[in-house]
Length: 266
Image (cartoon, rainbow, N blue to C red; front, side):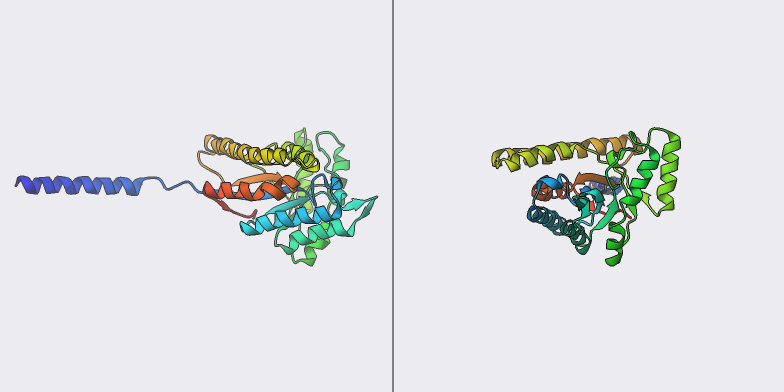
């Protein structure tokens, strides 16, 4: 009788343990969309045409390696040399589309809606689609997304409503950012060190860049939990630059190591 009672208690304990395991919350789902600003290349005038091609291809190769489909936002002013569209710079955008990436509008001249007249800003939006829309159409794609330069949506509700309505009327959706950061500061220092041939400095900056970005991921994950009560799908903002040509692979690998899955802005 005592042995039977012990077996019963053991079965009850095992059942309770199994129920506890089944009731445990599922692992958090980490999803992230990758976006890049300032195409065809940040600080483009400091690089030769051959360097521009090399940097572009290396960024695209990293995205392909990790099977990331990104949205890349263009400033069409950077396509021009002496006031005219340069065919080799335009071809860089063609390479993005040929690689299966998506282009978005980032304004022709990267104007700040907090500092310029809204009419001038709106004209800059339309000026910023003259090359990318036909180029995307030739690849069977379209230009759906607009990202505000500096992420500035306007200083008053009236300006915000007017410009948002204008963008919607012209077929644009506003591209959000949930992981903002100061990556561009690292990129400027990195480009300077690279131009000097300072490999120790570029290696140090690159390693610290990845560390910094993971710290920013931690911060915005905490914000997500505090505000939404859970991890939301994230949208990462980085730039098309030399820093990411060299270190994007390490960053994406680190994010994969944290369990992130790549999603595309739908």
